[in-house]
Image 1 (cartoon, one colour):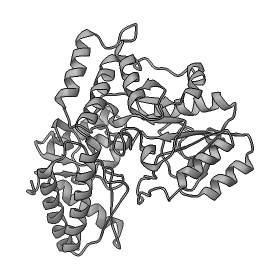
Image 2 (cartoon, one colour):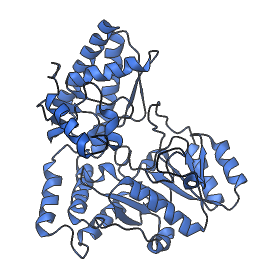
Image 3 (tube, one colour):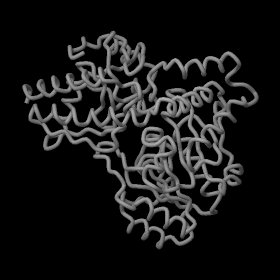
Image 4 (cartoon, one colour):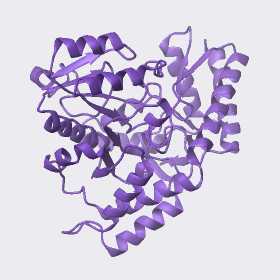
Length: 410
């Protein structure tokens, strides 16, 4: 696995071809991964691996930015989806599998009394905001500075192309773990705050990830309850990787709404908003829909994914791998005279080389890519339940060889 991959000639050819018909060739968050040695297009994928169009094999530590949790082309999930495809997928009526999936989520997620479905995590977060506003009759939203909840204009920075300043007029940004700032925002905007939205822990891009301080979430929950503010957890990224009952369960608090997506369908396009019973009428009143929201096959895939995660005790399996990965990478970094900082939870690690220029860190990522380990330089990574001991050994070998090559180049 540690042998350097060949030049990505076919990838480069396709990239040039794509630029002729697609702005930028590769767009959205995928475009930030296109470095010197980065593959650009895949040809196939299986378990914890994918192959690019030049035949190079990669151990994937991005897991499609989170959706892959049971392995690419998981036979259990794909069988459930195919059986539903054979019956019908997008039809003029919803399939009963929608009810089955909702029941599965209500049984599995601690705060869930009901569920609504979409396609992307951004569908869930935008719907959550609308439900909160419908419930409270208020307009303002408190969020964490650098927190990410999708690409809707209310979430983007004021200077983002295509947005206007008024898009974020009702958004109040506060720092993570800063209860005093939350208290101030509430007191300065009495009876105006509809909701507080945050990930269960802070995982911004290009920065160390930060866990909640002791009693942080309990204090947030108390302030929200006292002031009639709907508490929303955006569990799109971390969902089903910290606790199958909801990441909030690991931190001992109860939100009103939980946004889910990514790993929920093991790659099939589906997301969900689940919530407490007292918000059910407001959730029913809000009009938020889409042509593909009722696709039945992704719902069948999601149900199969959730049941399989429970069956194989996926969270504990991923945590064990993540902890071994962290300790192993830190050790091989030290052996090569580098300090690797690993932050966040074990199943979603963020890596950063300490006391070096960012270009050195980027070069290490590039060396790993050359040797068949797929990572990016700006985002947390993801562990899946299909990553195994052999993967770990290969990852550590690649990382060590990459550190060695990096040392020689400095």
